[in-house]
Image (spheres, rainbow, N blue to C red):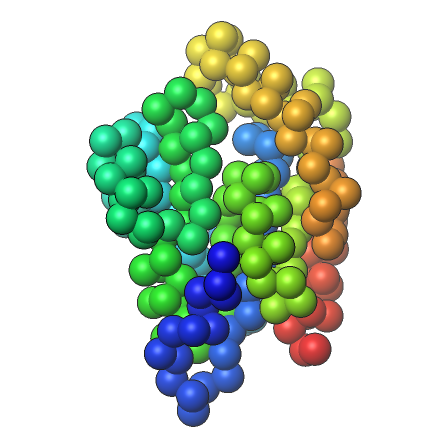
Length: 202
């Protein structure tokens, strides 16, 4: 696939933004780290992913995700509207809309992706050195199960599915530029900030 972001009509008076990709098994604390970084002055803007799953808790359309029905998602796939997408479970899709990347590139900001592991690997392959890929890893599968259980949002059957998926996702960690083990959140944040600062000054 062609490099989408850098073929858009970016305002050339602004420096083109870089891409920071975050991927992790569900429950690893990836979203918490991403949200904290958005307030750290790195000129970051969040790329809002699309999904066909139902909103959880207080999630809002166009804020946490662009929520689509499975049929709407498949229609956008057919239109070529996605930079990357994956069917994670049957009829449960996640993907990155090209329109999101275009919007952030045009503003000249650095783009933050919070995407599935396969999506993260694919975006990194597309953008190479223009992207920093970070894999957020739980300290152990046992701790991951504890975190998912404490959320109180999924059934035990769904948690078992997430754990099985996490075990597979952990095998992708070596394909990322940086692996952050999120045992203590403060320490994980500090390590992530250092990696980000080093990448953005290049």
